[in-house]
Figure 1 (spheres, one colour):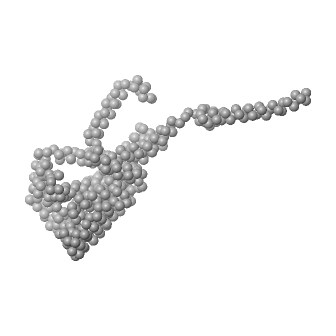
Figure 2: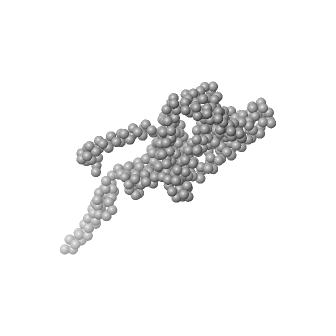
Length: 403
């Protein structure tokens, strides 16, 4: 049924459909960041979910393990790393870029929680002391009473987790419904959907997750290294260096070496000129930890799950850069999605649409020929007929002469 006939026969239902579509677009636009991050959680846990599902044989249980035993603890670790980064940023800029008092939290409690030396402490009672726990609970209670920010965060986190959970468990049903509704086996829509899914897996699991994983390891590792650093050879802004190492991992080939090699050279220069050669051991330790823990471990863990890249590296770098500037924090996840949708439309759909605009064919006996070829063949046949008529005329004249 064409669009014109559908408008004529079912105008009321068309209006209802347009209104429902507008409502869906409004809801999605209001929670676009939450939905896109939930999509990132889905793609970042899908390879692990596939292995767990083969072991346990129950999709719901495998999805729950993937989300609650892997994804949420990883998010908590990322949040702790960001807490260290904001603490370091406040110390370096002498400002309060993120003031804990704005959230009803005690700044001294936040500083104690963000202090990496607590992680090296062997006295676990520091973490469970009545003073610290009571201060934290009092601060959280005050924040909940004065602000609704924590409630909003929890609601968004629930939506992210629920979206990732149901996509992991029922993604085959969603894809089957889409293919039944919009395309048949081997159709153009199936090819487009498969290409988009493959590229999103490579980008979310291969690139962005690697950057988040590397940045988190870098922040915590460098902050812990500074605990044992000599006074004059410590890592400058250790948490920020770790965060920049994660961002630099998005750059191919060189990656985070653009960060820790210049920092290491600066530390070696200070060791030779200020602190003395006896502190060079820490510079060597910094390079070794950077190469083995920060640079190699994320690549070894994630590389077996990542296939070849199908999106140009330069286009990805532009999307990572322009996305947060254009959309905000979720632009880091939304802009690559838009990039993949556009690139695969040009690769898969557009050539098929252009092929449909070829000139019509003239129905002849046998295989249909294009218009241009059929005209040429008709011209050749007319020339052949005229040549045959010219050849017949000399044969008729001798008979007349004989008679």
